[in-house]
Length: 297
Image (cartoon, rainbow, N blue to C red):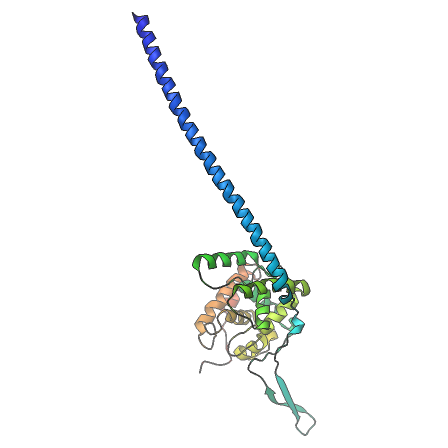
């Protein structure tokens, strides 16, 4: 009797086990089918994206070759800047003295690279383009970030310009907010760095950048804000002037000294963080009192 009951129990357990096996097998088949569908779907999507990317690359290459190449063949020697002209007179004793300086609406006092304090260059690099010495005209990290930001915010702004790109924008005067202009600027910067070294590009930047108060170039800015030649500027004064280019009116010390001071401190901190300054240089310059050439009217 017990053997018969045991047999019945074993038979029932076997049936339950078989049923469970069939259910599990069915679930596994279902999962496998779903996985195959997902892999097939994503595989097709990857293929479509690759084909679309290749098509876009071909169209873009055609556009660059036929429409941009001729426009990005840039030479700085093709551009001239307005410079002040000074008229001298003989005072009768044989000594020549300055009579008047003639200037246009946009006038530059060109200074050679060797006349510019190294701190001025470092201040500009620290705040405007910290990978200036490493990239070949375009900072692809910043450019990619700017494009992603533009895509998600839907704003028609194109940030991420390097010092080299800013030189192109300043000498050409082309600051349109268009994709075409940005592409010209990018490819133009790449071409520019094939022809000129970093010192030459920096010299151009510091002579054509706008520093507010009608000052084009660091020489005019040094004379306007501190009443001295650019070669005489201190580290603290260099940082003060370098900060103006971002928003010339907002950071103009004649307009608001507090804004200029905050910007100057930001630049000094960046110079320290990027290894341009020792901690002592950083703190001393931060504490230095700035004496501007005139006060707001």
